[in-house]
Amino acid sequence: MTIEYIPNKGFNFENLSFVWGQNRSEIREKLNHKHIEDDRIIEMADFFEGDTSFDIKQIRDIYQNLNNNENYFFLNYDEDNKLSDLEVHGGIDIKIKNIKLIFEIDIDNCINLLKSIDEYYTEIEDGNFLFPNLKMTIASSESMGGDGSGLSYFYASKEIEHLLEQ
Image (tube, rainbow, N blue to C red; front, side, top):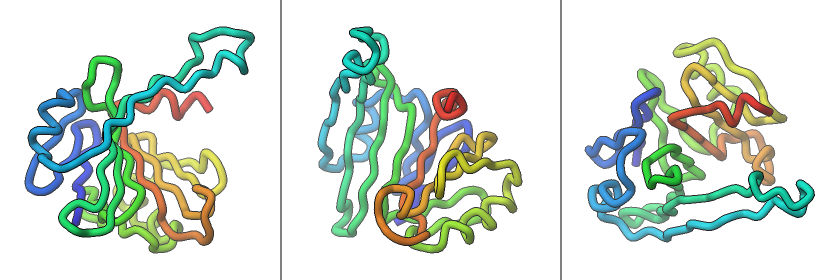
């Protein structure tokens, strides 16, 4: 299985196009796969003297093991249920322009492939790399709490300001 990521637009999956800002119900209907709705508020007020403005509103659908293949990804939405982010945690190749990222290959190999598209990137924490022009990050297994330097996480977003604030 492959997701074709199109920076600043969205992605293609299973011969279907999904664009940033697309309505959640429309995406669910197009995908027509079982999912888990995982909407919640992560309370942060205890860490900010009772200020609830730091609470994190998580609005997402979790998809896994589509078409009898081992895979795991999230579609994240904004407060208006419009598509805002894609997170892939495994089992799906990521195509970007003329390259393909395959989970478990060494993160340095992924960086070298991505540099052929855009040389500007930064390591935002050990093993986690931001490509701001592509509005995406990739991370190694070790940076995600596992073992090894293989690709373990892909994140793409309509907006990346929240990543630049770190």
